[in-house]
Amino acid sequence: MQRGSEPVLLGKVIATHGLRGQLRVVLFSGDFSSVAGLDSVILKGTTSGMEAFAVAAIARHGKKVLITLKDFDSINQVLSLVGRELYVRREQLPVLSEGEYYWCDLLGLKVVTDQGENLGILADIIATGSNDVYVVKSGEKEYLIPALEDVVREVNLDDGVMKVSPLEGLFDL
Image (cartoon, rainbow, N blue to C red; front, side, top):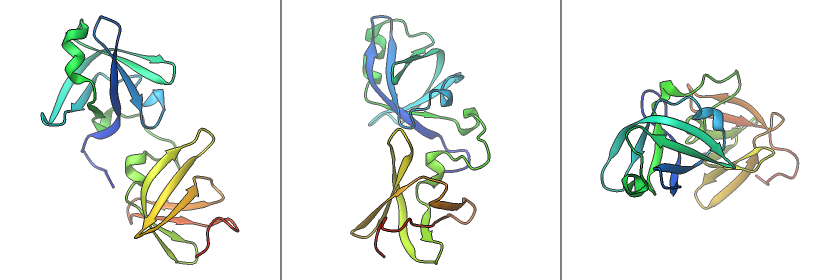
């Protein structure tokens, strides 16, 4: 689980765009509102650690996002940034409504049924379009749990637990 002041992973720079130094970014959550008002981003390199950059502009581009960094105005200046993961400071993220969570806060939660059966740890989240699917792993066993109100009964970030009520036939315990 990632909480506190640590940078939050939002996406990845997958390519440049045009000749004027724009970066094409795929967001892991697919939610443009999480980056629309950013004034800076942090890019993590494979060997260079984390670097902060001021943002000049952010625009939606189909299912991706175009980011223009301040003082970068040519493709040659940004080529080395392709492939880096995109992070932001937590305080830059929009405040969520009751019952909404950032993926980084859910990953690592212990998942139990409403009968107390331990299913494992929330290891991954798959965005499907209609609803997310939680990938819960316990050793070799893996459960795919739809992120629906009827299934996910409680999320307690303080205790690090997600309580689920499996639909009949969803998986055998």
